[in-house]
Amino acid sequence: MRHLKLALAVGALVVVAFAYRYAFWENADALNSDHAVVGLQAVKIFQGEWSMFLWGVGYQASFEPLLAGVAFKLFGYGYQSLMGVAFLGFTLVIALVCLTLSRHVGIWVAFLTTLPIVLTTYSVSNVTLYPPRIWCLSAVFAGVWALDRVPMSRCPRLSLFAGVILVFFSLYIDFYSIQFLPAALILAGLSLRAMVATDIRNSAKKVLVSAVLLGGSFLLLTRFMGPTGGVPLAFSPKTFLHNIPLLLNTCWPTLFAVPSIEAWPASFKLLHLVAIVLYVAANGLSGWVVFQGRSSDSARRLGVFGLVATATSLCGFLGSSMSSDSHSARYLAVMIWSFPFVLVPLAYRINQKVYSGLMVLYLVPMMAAGWLSASAAIPHLGNEGEVRDYLRSEGVRYAKAPYWLSYRLSFLFEENPTVIPVNEWEDRYFPYRHAANQEKRMAEITHSEMAGRSLQDILKECEVLHRNCETKRIGKFMIVIYPQTPSL
Image (cartoon, rainbow, N blue to C red; front, side, top):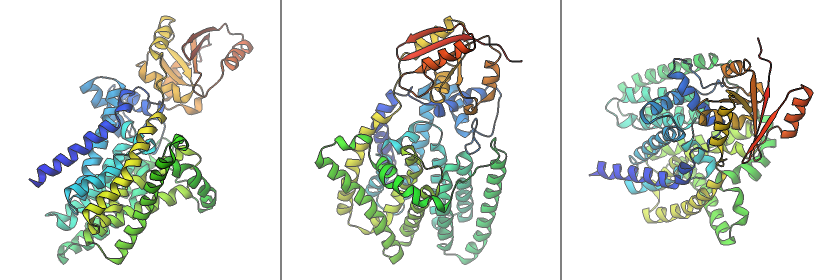
């Protein structure tokens, strides 16, 4: 009966997650170029072009393009298949988190405690719908699930080894999960310490060391094989003071709310403030419960994992030279992903009715903020089909566009025509540009709502180079077709 109730709880969480994100699903073609590259590479993989890494980067693997290629084979080429791959990874995350929590608290409490990663704002939700990223989180939480069961497992050494390897494998999928590594290794050590049998514990220490060495060696090998020659951590304590105002004034509000929060009624602003206070208080109280030993040992282990991951994410943000604007809130998303684990010691300690009431106070404003943040999704630009048909009718096989538009259009056009970035340094797949340079006719596409070169700049360049240009406006798109001299 317990297994059935647990399956129903996980199923309900997945249904809530899908319903909550349905607006995004209906607007599935609103992907950007980073997402579209996954789909384009998926096609090339099944045409025989294999790479260990995602096009143009050394910190993300080709794991998600491979999964996307399988989805295209099963369900057909398209943006919904691409989104489906990401949502499948999110479904796995939900199941793993709920199953892990249910070992330490009741099923209802596990359900409630998992909801903070289901009802989130866009800065967290976007990775649950668009690749690449969510599958590295799936690997992390699979590792946590395995490490958490070490003390109670019939094969503790196997669980320990598998958990550590999965966490290191997540770093290969996407180096973003480095934020979970310290917490996961501490969890492994705590789980090892909790083993009762001394002889098994002694041999498990060797297993842990072996897994860390093997996982670390694989990670170093793959990273230095990457197209960028490794992954700079870009971390410096000197940036702390610079990033504190960015955290408090921009990224923290983005993580918990949406830009339109200023237009909300005062009563709802107050409710939202209560949610943020509850989040901060939960972290503080959880730390007190953990270090005072006022919860079960197993619940405390998960609490330590969540608290260390949260602290690592916060320190990583403050010390990173890559933190620059509201989009940098994605680096803080680990604070939300780890929140269910932070809550476990409190859920174990607090009366169930009181805990449920506090969770509702937190979840309702967060759910509303998440719904409103659906407007922050990349807009459906419209008229892409007309642009594609016009370029095909003109015999144009390659075109240029601003980066965030280029690969998106290539994916929607099924590479006919193929659209590459205007700037060569933004290329993710160099054979596209090499082929484009052989063409006698080229088009440049702009959109009035996206940053890029203006029509006047393009026409002025054509005049300087003595090119005869043809212009065409389709909705908010502007297309300029001009001759070019093929390169040798």
